[in-house]
Image 1: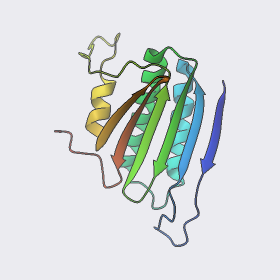
Image 2 (image 1 turned 135 degrees about the horizontal axis):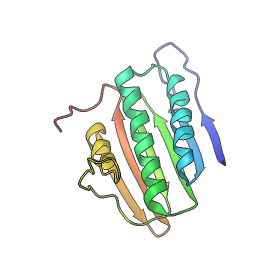
Image 3 (image 1 turned 90 degrees about the vertical axis):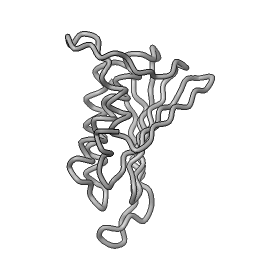
Length: 155
């Protein structure tokens, strides 16, 4: 397994103050076994944030990381994908890039457990905003999770 990690973190001058945006950047081999380590590294990044995240927000970020990396692995067909996390006092931003120009789309969930179809809708419900940018070399998917709590599930 190959992944490169660069933590670009700031030190808070005072408790509960973010003085600069902490950043996590990963380049991941695009295969299913990388999803677990991506979640773990994201959780470690989140644990170091000041102010700390509430449990529900932390869980939402980790779930979105898991779903977006899983989608890149399953659907992009490339050898590498990227994961970038940034945090500021209002939000945590998750960006996953892959080599496929095919945009994500909602699918009918497979309730038998065989075919998925739950992830994209879940990402869109948990995030305050979702953007997809297509480019010649692939796409990036960005989800913004509010530090004030996940959006209402009725959204």
